[in-house]
Amino acid sequence: MNTSPAPPSSRRTPRAVKIALGALAFGGVLLAALYVYLDMERAPLDEQARAQAPGQFIRLPDGVTHYEFSGPEDGPIVVLVHGVSTPYFIWDSTTQALREAGFRVLRYDLFGRGYSDRPDAAYDLPFFAKQLDDLLTALNIAEPVNVAGLSMGGPIATAFANRHPERVRSLILIDPLVLPPDNAIAKIIEIPWLGEYLMTTAVVPFVLLQSQREDFHRPERMPADWETRYRVQLQYEGFRRGLLASVRNIINKDVAMPEYKALGATDLPTLLLWGAEDKTITRDDIEALRAAAPAVQFHVIEDAGHLPHVERPEVANPLIIEFLNAYAN
Image (cartoon, rainbow, N blue to C red; front, side, top):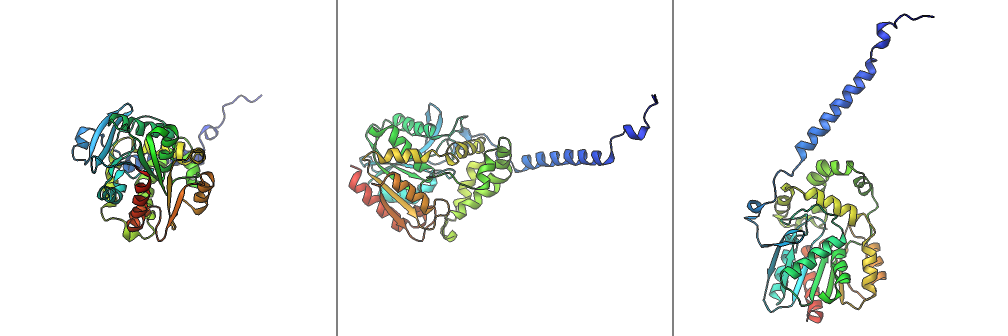
């Protein structure tokens, strides 16, 4: 039996393996460096950060909420709920039009966005419906209000109306989320760790900003200061976590349609507006909603994308005000 030691060359790690291990180590370092470099969350959202912010702040059970409550004190109240990522400034033109028409307007930043806190939470429909309920309670608003929801704010507003029918007088849905997207990005985001990594290195620094422009059918209609105002929230810790949780628990889940079906079983006055050139919410989505809630009043805003109230305010705002004049009191 040959018991002599193996030749030294046979005990060495093959050169190809060494190269592969080195490449993997270098790749890991590179990915980590890219994560650090592209991480935009470098500041805490504290009192100093909020010192220069417009509007007001109020502490709710789940955290501080940034809001603005303006307009005639005796006017019917309209609550505006924004979408997945753009804070309450997305309602600027509608807020002004409603105030001039005699309405009192409450708009606020959803948790995880703008200047509102970023609590460690599920960021699902019950969570956001609770935020609105807590906000109305904290502001001592006991009378029924009119609620408008944009994009992801649509199912949030509807979920609130379904859970608190005594608090809602009418409902307005503008290009609301209806069905989960069917695309590769949505599926990849669901993968643990990979979703978190891509949110930091791709989605927040690049995709989100591009999507802001794509929400407009005619990009030249995007307000000049939009991107600057949008970027402010990206620097505060917790934005990514809240956004990713919302995508996983609302956008990518079939949670909106059950709310619209429940809405369809009520007699709550509801207005539905949709931009004909919307690349996010399709006509099929809208028809699915209308089938679930056939009594909604429906208007198509031509020559507008995902934000018809911003892109065509001269068309959308009169429709909103006409509807509210009929049902807000």
